[in-house]
Image (tube, helix red, strand yellow):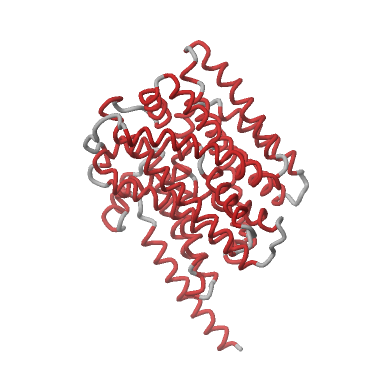
Length: 441
C-alpha cells in the first residue's frame, strides 16, 4: 500500500475518533485542573489516546472479527450483549446524538436568540443527520470522503485556533479546583472515558480492516501493520490536539470564569481570541469534526447490526433507523446527554479495557478461556458499582467496605485488582481442569 494511502487511513482514524467529546472535554479538564494540568492530561491521554490505540491493535490482529473472538473465549451470548450495548453506546444512544448536539451548541447556538434555540436545534440536527446518512450510505467510500477531504481541512482550521492560543494566551493558569486538587491523575484518567474512544476503537478497527481489505490486502500481518501505522498517526495528532485544548481551558479561567460545559468554554474562548469571526471559525471546526465522527460511527453501527441480525435488515435500513433515532436524541440537549451517558460509560469502560488488555497479552497465558471469564466477571461486579456511584445512587455501606479493603476504589479504579485476581483464578482453574482431564484419560 502506498504511503499516501496509509496516511489517508491515519487521517480517517483521527477524524472518526476526533468528534464531539474530544473537543469539549479537554478544555473543561484544563479549566478545572489549573496548575495540575500536567498529571490530569497525562491520565486523560492514557484512556483517551493510549487505550484506544491498543484497542485498534487488538482488533487489527484479530482481522476485525472481534465478535467471533469474544464468542470463542467468553461466550456467544456475552459477545452479542456486550457488543450490542457497546455499539448502541457509541451509536444512537449517546455518541452520534452528541456529535449533532455539540456541533449545534458551539457552531450555531451563539448566533441565535433564546426564542429561536429549540426550532434552530431541530432544523440544524435534521440537516446534520441527513448529511451523515448520505455520506455513510456507502461504507467503502468512508476513507476517501473522510481521510482525504475532510481531515486536512479540519487540521488546517485547528492549527489556526491553537497557534493563536499559544501566541497570545487568554490569561494565567489558576490553582486546581475540586477533585483535581488531590487526585488530578485519576480524575483525568476517568474523564478520558467520556470520549468513548476505547469503545469506538472496536468500530474504528473494523472500518479500517475492511478499508485495507478493499485495497486487495488480505494477509493478517500486513493488515495489522498498516492499522498500527495508521493508528500511530492518529494518536500523535490526537495527543497534540488534546494538549492544546487542555492549555486553552487552563489559561481561560482567569478571564472567562468557569463554564458549565466544555462546549460553552470553547465557544467563549474562540470569541475572545478572534471576536465574532472566532465563532465562525469554531463552527467550521466543530461541524467537520462532529460530521466525520458521526459518519464513521453510523457506518460501523449499521454494519454491526446488519451482521448481528444476519442480513435480515439491510445496511441501508439499519442506517436509516440509527440516524432517525440519533436525530431525536440529539434534541435532548448536550448537558443532559453528558449526564445520562456518564454512568453507562463508567460501568462499561473497565470491561472493555480488561478485554482489550487480555486479548493483547493472550500469548503469555496461552489464551485460556477461564482467564477471560473470571477476570471479566470480577471486573463486571466492580464496574457496576462504579456506574451506580456515578449515577448518584451510592450504596453507602458497600462503598465503605470497598473503600477500606479494595485498593484504588476511592479513586474509581477499584476494578484493577479484582481483574488481576480473576485472571489468576482463571489461570489456576485451567491447570486444574487440564490435570483432571489428563487423569481421566
